[in-house]
Length: 421
Image (spheres, rainbow, N blue to C red):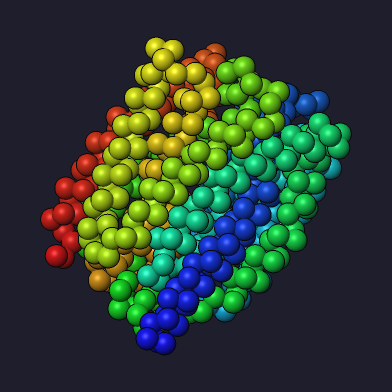
């Protein structure tokens, strides 16, 4: 009885400490990545290029972020346990210095500064998730971590708008000022992550041992499940492009929906989205069978993909207003997007009985996903510049809904034949 009591408290302690620390660390990271998107950045003096200035800034940051994800395929896969906390602080510190440079340099060089801002930040997810993966509590911890990037994006953008409206900070200094406000939270949360115990013997029995994956191990896993992973990654590319567009151009979307002056709408629309995604991911905790949980996650994603299209159709018919549409489409996207970062690959590694790391698969998918995000932005600027933001997003939502639904079902059929019973 004392051992069972101790085990219960160990489980609760890991969830509380790990969840709060991981949530706070990633929440703080978003304060260095997303606040700039709350400004519209009308073409500044010295900008005479065909590419819209804000689109150029977003693309530059995303390219830096995507390059970091590509680097992370190897770095995160081979990551050990030492030096992670220092790496998180150093990388985010570098990204903040890039925001200071962004405020100081002329317009063309601001694009380069935004690339430098995105480059260090792409490794943060893998560093934070490395503290959480391979545990019996990983679904709970992953759900809490995913809730952070759903909530944080809207909140830090709201803080950014507040600094411009209340503190009268210019839109160019706003990103650096907003980020600086979150340094104390970042330091405290990274310290909390460093206190977490390592994966226990019970964790290894339930989820398979987690160890760095060298080049041979990565090739072996891709050789075993390559076609299924390709289908899943193609779906993730659609989810990432649509989710990023909604996130990066929320200011433009809300302006066309008639709520452009409401700083609180950024958070208002994301709280229910986070709750829905948290419930959906948290439901996986109760499922012990890794194979069963993996396939149930597929059907959860299929429902999310269907919701994206149905909500857009209802909005087009004026059956729902813009706020409800943004909430439902956000919930659908995150129900599809977040499992990749917390549940889907975690359960795949466990069900396949391979010794490895979830971070490798997450970074492989992310590197491809952000390529799709850049492609969508380039198409918007050069192929659909005359189309307003809402109509463009509606078209993308229909395409994402239909194609991703087909891909998710295809993946479920493939892995049902490949994974061991």
